[in-house]
Image (cartoon, rainbow, N blue to C red; front, side, top):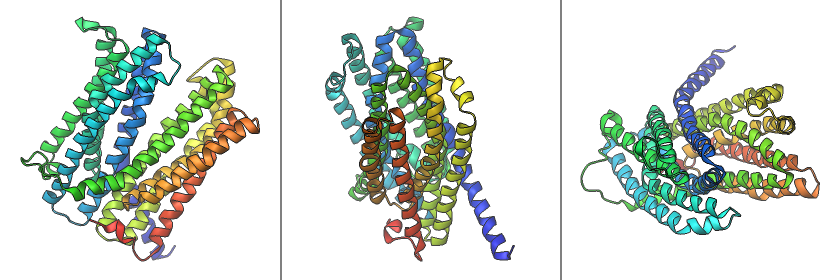
Length: 461
């Protein structure tokens, strides 16, 4: 091995350690977020079928807007990371964050109003029993009061991650998870003298957990030196139009990317209903396993955004190239591990979910598809993160939306119903969509960074 090769291998290993150091707390934070939904479902199921249906429908409807607004404020991570990499003054970065905070309040209020007004219409589109429908509307209206706190949490999390402070989200997530679980019990069951609210109580618990997490982020912005330097709570809150436009310009495409992917899987789940209850249950098992493992590459993608953004802000094209490729490489490596486990031990994995033989047989077969699914899902998540670090979001939006809705869903429908492959056709559609997205996004990053320097937009202030 030459000295040059040895030096390059050292840089790769050093970058991999730096990436994982940021990513691991994010992985844990993502699991706390998933855990909230799991606790909600378990507790609602203990009350009755109407309550469970209301929480299932309400939480899915809420999630569609949740992920859009979350995506908007994900733009703040690369913006802040690039500012830090460029050596920008903390006070100037603070002005950007303060303007983004005002935007978060405005968008959160809009989100609340839309949910309140649209809740009866959304629920009315579904064929629910009258009592379940009423509970679902009340759930949506209750949880909507958490919209402003959640938007501010999205902002706080991404600003902290832009500073490479990824443990902040973990602490906030753990506290939010605990408060959500306690309030679920108190408000849904009417324990310790609290009113018994049933499914709407779950919505109030989620809203309160959002408020609690917002307060935790606020405390970090006062107590942590790097975040306190932003002077977020300084009097006089000017709204800088350039800052707002930058967040929306970069963030709206990210939101549409997340929404397009989420909608594809939601529609796929609805298609499964055509193949019977056992198939729906088996699909739920396989997709839940895939969702759990996806938390790892998703978190690596978040870390890669920060690492690439820092290098882009410092105008270090070689580091941009290295950091992005290492992030994508870590994602691809993890996919080999997760895919191997699914392919080699599907029966063991499925047995943790169900002992119903007819469901388990289908779920085992679907896990083989999920194993192939992993190979592309991990790459597209990390490549997307690398491109976000370059503030490149419009082209990735076109790539992913086309992959999911021009390739994936039409192919899933055609294979499932025209070629009569049934549920396996839907999963082939998922695999094709993610393959196109993975190849498109990874290729774009390689092309952008093959030049002597990333595009000028990557260094925009």
